Amino acid sequence: MMLARVVGEVVATIKHEHLAGQTLLLVQPLAADGEPQGKVQIAVDHAQAGPGDRVLVLDEGNGAAQVLKRSRGAVRTVIVGVVDSVETEPGTPRAAKRRP
Amino acid sequence: MHFGRVIGTVVCSERVPSWRGQRTLLVQPTDSNGVDQGRPFVAVDTTSAAPGQWVFYIKSREAAAALPDPDNPADAAIIGIVDSKREWPPGDAAKAGRP
Image (cartoon, rainbow over all chains, first blue to last red; front, side):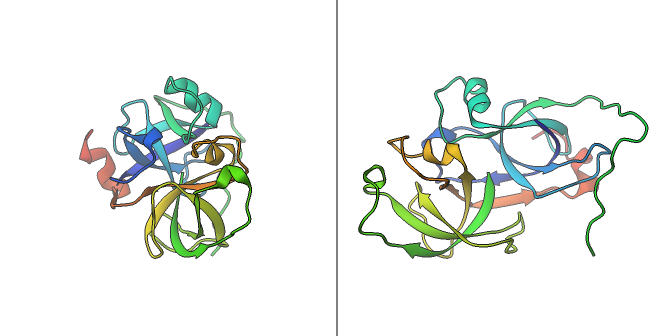
């Protein structure tokens, strides 16, 4: 699972039947220090997450199928929790500096 | 799931039986703003997408699970066509409230 921030939403009328009725949110993965790291992805919302929420995102098909209570299908990235707080030890690796 | 843009079609007359009836398209990955990122790849299409359309795709084992016969060798599948996308600016996200 990864920490991410909800940064937007996607509307898609034509989508795979396994995604029917699901809310699709844009999530920006975060490093341990809370800084954005990596590419924005699309995730199925299963935690009633809102704009700006820091969330826990599962990115694995078998777990996603279990969470959504269905057989394995075309779903892999699911928001499974809204994070209240994260505590880190001193010296925790920070987000890699972005290349200029 | 990631964003991509359909940039072409791929036709193979001779292919594995589990792909019978499926279309294969050439996809250029993009970021959430539609800017090209990385190298194009071939994906099976479950949405009747056309070249030029902005789509989202799924990779790895779950791509194969998107097809009717899950025992197939797909490692990427287009599973949606993007109608619209909205990103909340970082400062406004907290103020925007829950949708």
